[in-house]
Length: 430
Ligand SMILES: *Cc1c(COP(=O)(O)O)cnc(C)c1O
Image (cartoon, rainbow, N blue to C red; front, side):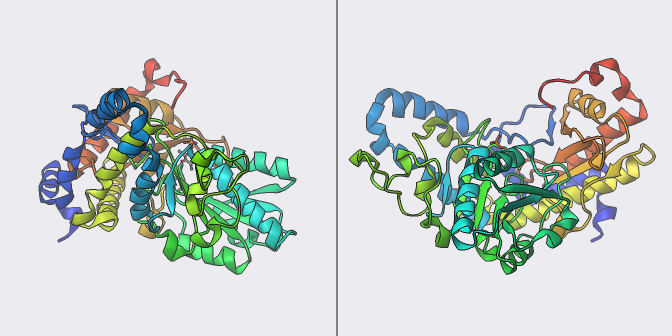
């Protein structure tokens, strides 16, 4: 079956949706009518179960159970329970992941631990290498930590990573799927190259967990963090997660040694004894209501397990992004759009980014006014141009949605609708 021929009309896209075994997963969500949501990579959609589950935690577990719920409702283990679910999505084992704090905070913890390991094993290694186009918070956290410890943050372009793995480098800190371009690193290959040079790896899975298959164990990665409110559908500000390879987990305290990371928090002892394993990466009392919402989001991804799990979701995601690219290039040809996401499946995350010499922000705004929600990411006026970003979460997006999204984009460009003044005023959150 030639997919291109099959998908060149709206009718054909609808037909493929009806034959798609993953299409049923969409019914797990309450999507607003008239919206094509291509921003699940920034804030995942609301699962149908979340509102009732959160209400139950509030009215029953908190309202009626009160403090007894730490035990009777399992509140105390909530970070580990959610962590075990996340582990199934990122190739980690049980008891290796906790859901806690934010991605930024978790990154601070693992980078500190990695620098501690390097300081002990190879004190001459005092550099963190990362990508210049990494998500800014990752760079800010690394910069602050470097300042505190007298280390150096070295920023490179993706093609310079291999040559920057030198004898004075302690840690290679990368985001697996680039938030701007959707370009994906070969985690196993890059980790092996780093290890061959004596360098530890820290992976940010913010745009990978729940989006692409990840195998932390197989890649022999050292540390990983990731986000709960993007592809994991945990809700705004959902707890993030942290994974440390079991061989490293017990080597160091993490720097935020709070009582929830203590081996026996309810002994209330004056001295700190870190819990074994990943539990020591907890800090203080955890947000139980948010963890309950995250749990509902994780269940929407685990519901794909009997249908082929992340591998099946990945196959659909690639088919969706292939189709989007093909339709943009054929139906919107001549409008100055350039593909910024790799065509090679091995290097593509679950999003497609386009660049345009002018108007990227306004085009995104015009699309949002039509109910096609993507987002805009500002460039630096130099090597990294402004980006129109479209995320494809295969749990909720179908082939008909892709067709319709491109049809709207075509109309916005054909009619120059984006040039209207209301689409050219910048909001605080882009
Ligand atoms: C979304 C994202 C974050 C978010 O960090 P917060 O602490 O949740 O604000 C961090 N890093 C990357 C790469 C991201 O994509």
